[in-house]
Image (cartoon, rainbow, N blue to C red; front, side):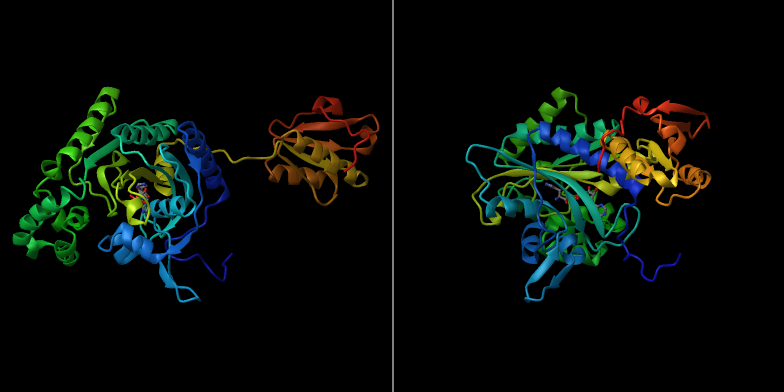
Length: 419
Ligand code: HAM
């Protein structure tokens, strides 16, 4: 079949077999996040574009190259959300969800849009499962958030994840580091890509996140942010590391991990698995973001996992359910028994079984073929001569064995039943 239209580049359909596994993953996330006292929130897919420019950062790839941005019919500049953190913070402020003295914990599951070059692990529409915890600055929350991320992946069967950890400092210590970076990169500027030369002017930290090979080589020799952290940031980071160590949570200190969004402060982290060149998830603290969006001076921290990337890893590692879900019963009937067949199907569905029935009362033989095509485990054949004694034929579609059974064996009764 050749349809007239196909989906756009970088977006795709999620088909039933895949979606079934997605829902299992999502259910596990919901259940685990609930136990950590997170509550689900859903924000709109469109938001004011300016909000992302301000928070994700003018110099970030997301804002410079990847944001789906357009004017709506009211001439407002809107964006399809490229990420979920700024929208959650906006919703938190707009709906007055702040209760002083209490950490506000939210999680979300939804699609995000980035006009990336489509390739393995990079789509233009992708899905994130994320959490945000607002209102607490303690390193203990950093540890809990990281623990939650790893626990979730572990529950899905991914025990061999690699955790990358860094601190990106705060507005007190970062200018000093930016200065050091500038001094380091200026003599090398001719070897940096065009984008990095712009970054050198505006936000040299962004150079650390550049994916161009030549830039990566120079970045490897750049000064490390860890040497520039102020006392507060250093103590915070040492505390995070020491608790992770005590808990036996292993991590790789990656002092180049600045992440692709500008709002981060202090702890940043990413998770991946060996052999994968991309992160499955990432996050960090953003202690200035709430204030930046017009709210009180409150800290925040969170992470997001990319559903497609997670799914591919689980698939590669054989950690997904493979069998297609098939009907438990296929109801076949003499043409005079249509109503009874509908009632029986409904009763069995009511009991939780997956039930399919023939919609055209053809011969029993052709209905049996239909049952076969549906891959149903069992067929129930309703024949007039048997039903007078409350009996049906139960056929095991795998072995072909069949037997006459009373309806009581199916734990249903058609007596007195009405639709
Ligand atoms: P991010 O690192 O930009 O962080 O995205 C998080 C995850 O989304 C990535 O690790 C990746 O799995 C997935 N992802 C990102 N871009 C794509 C893409 N083009 N195609 C497929 N998957 C993708 C954030 O978005 C932050 N809001 C996370 C956060 C929450 N930080 C604090 N709270």
